Image 1 (cartoon, rainbow, N blue to C red):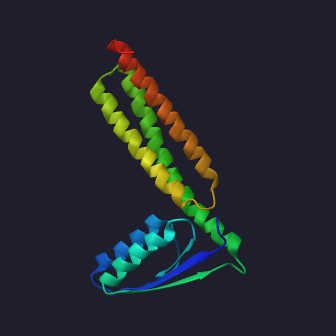
Image 2 (image 1 turned 60 degrees about the vertical axis):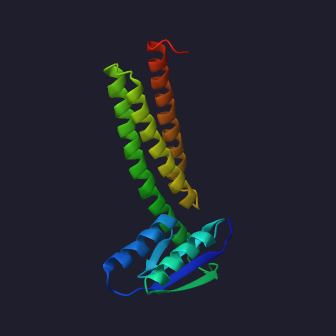
Length: 176
C-alpha cells in the first residue's frame, strides 16, 4: 500500500438532509475516516480513485462541491491508523455476531434433522451474504486490523459447517 492519503472535503446544501446522509454513507462504504465535519481521509489503494470519482459526481449533482488533496503524513500517522483499525474492528465485530447466528442456525437445523434442499438453499444464501460482507470489510481494511484474521477463520468455519450440512442432505437423498 502506498503512503499516500486522499483528503476529501465536501460542501453540501443543508436541505434536503438525504443528500448529506447519502454522502456520509458513501464515504463510510468506501472505508474513509471522518476526520472532521465533511472532511474525510483514506489511504490511496487500487480502485479508490474510481470510487471517489463516483462519489464526487453524486455530490456535485446534488448541488455540492468537492475538493480532494493527496498527501502523506508528517506526524500522527499511528493515531490515524489506530482510528482506521477501530472502525474496521467494529465492522468485523458485527460480522462475527452474524457468524455466530449462522452457527446457531446450522446447529438447530442439524439437531432437528431438517435436511431439505430448501433449508440448504436458505443457508447457502445466508453464507453468501456473510462472505460478500466480509469481502467488503476486507477491502476497506487497509491496515490489516487484528480482527481481520479472526473474521476470515470464522467465515471458513461457516463454510465448513455448510458443506457438512449439505453432505448430510446429499446422503439422506442418496446423492453422492
